[in-house]
Amino acid sequence: MKTLCVFDLDGTLLDTIGDLGTSCNLALKQLGYPFGYTVEEYKYMVGNGTRVLCERMLKNQNPTAKQVDALYEAFKEQYAIHAMDETKPYPGIVQMLCDLQKQGVKCAVLSNKPHAFTTQLIAKYFAKDVFACVYGQRDNIPRKPDPQALLALMQELDEPSGQVLYIGDSGVDMQTGKNAGVYTIGVSWGFRQKEELWQNGADAVVDTPTEILQFL
Image (tube, rainbow, N blue to C red; front, side):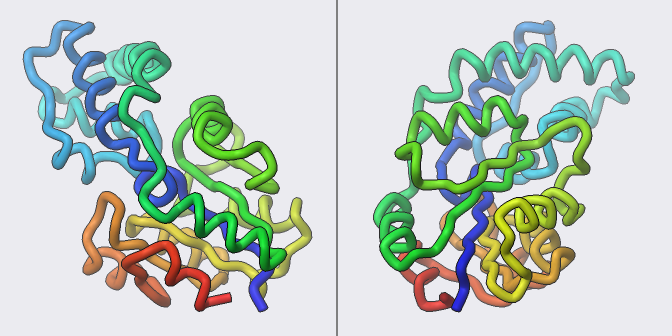
């Protein structure tokens, strides 16, 4: 029996890509860059943390660290304003979390999104007792796919690897779960394709939130 389900946030629990794209393009415009990207392009730029996202936005500019830092700050300003314009839970997510709770399964969140934004979104879109633990990206903890944050979360909740499911929508998530030695499930409704999930070590791939329940 699995007793803990750890979820990625963006592309797994919440459809955030519209607000991420809007904030990124506004940040670029704020700093005078004459270009932006489409939502589809952003789906393949997010996932490794906000600073890496900013580096990818400037990939053709040979950016300095100072330019990346400036874009990072501009993005945070814009996302603080627009993070909840269009964002919403994917269909079936809220019910699936409710079903897990009814079965006595703990739920947690592990995201490469900055911790402050992660906790704000969780507080906005989910009841306060849904998640036993929420970890966003913090400066003193390596980003996924490094397993350190996931292992720390499991230790905090006193859950051994054999009783944990890790669920996400990207290759980074699949690598994270496997690096931590836990059963890893990819979701097909997020930002990436099934092929990426399988290629990066997914133990299973599901098409609907309800299917996660069968792996308990």
